[in-house]
Image (cartoon, rainbow, N blue to C red):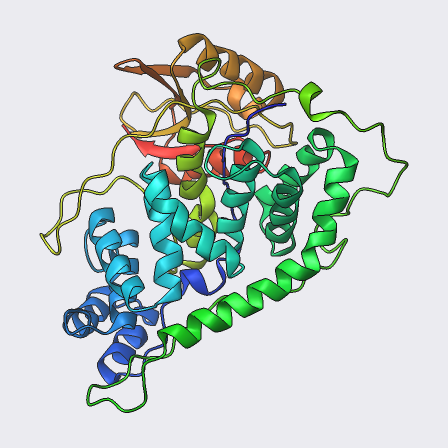
Length: 404
């Protein structure tokens, strides 16, 4: 059975996780108003004093500004630090984003407790990551039924990559396990509601306090799972003969293929919110490499992601012919990183057969130590590179726009 990369393209409406927190303090509210007018520097100026004073909403909003690079230079270390401050005060949106930031930085062991709690509250991106972990059995116990159920919940919430993965799972998970997963959905929905209520209750301070209470925390309100809403469950058929556990095909060992969950999981959270941010122009969870910025507050630099591989899924698209730019354009599209260069070449050959836009371009095999990064260039601008990646992402192929 294949070992899935966590290639989270996650181009969905980001629910409350991509929005600014609605504050109670006047200065924080003034910052939200300034942000909505497009005055990002003014918004940051309003939020910073409140964030330093301990307002969780202001801290979360400041983290969003650093993540998006609006009003301040893009700085993921700053974003992580402000998310962490807000999360320690019970800010659920900040905790959701913090888990994805850590996962993106390949600090997976540190991220998984946040990912798990977010998934338990019904956060679809976290459910997709956790479902893949249950399928692979690497970051969570192997449980095919629960992997199918969590992927179904993420699909029903509008996560397009989860719907595509669900179709793949139909051919990889036995029917009996899929039916068990579908039977789990009602209890999972009830558990999500209980977890959200408990989290909000735990973060609510006692009424008798001399300090001003923190502003209310908005949580994502996910729709109920309706069969057929965004994915049609498999028909109920006669169960095939049960395969004894000792005869089931084990997952490929890490030594037989280049750690598929590592880089794909990283690109997963990167793509998780890129499309929604570009469409809405609001804070989300996109993680481009940060430029140098002011020192406030310090945080550790994220390690480089590990190699990965990903099987493409066919999709119809309109070819995007390469434009000669004389090598002046810095924008490239990265399709993966591999410990074996042959794997990068095989992926390019496979994508070229399925995607005219890929066939029209030339591959770039960028060697960094023992890792080969598969990239392509020739884009006139960043927008053209984004369009190229968006077309591939529809098929489930991880694609990240980078600046060479």
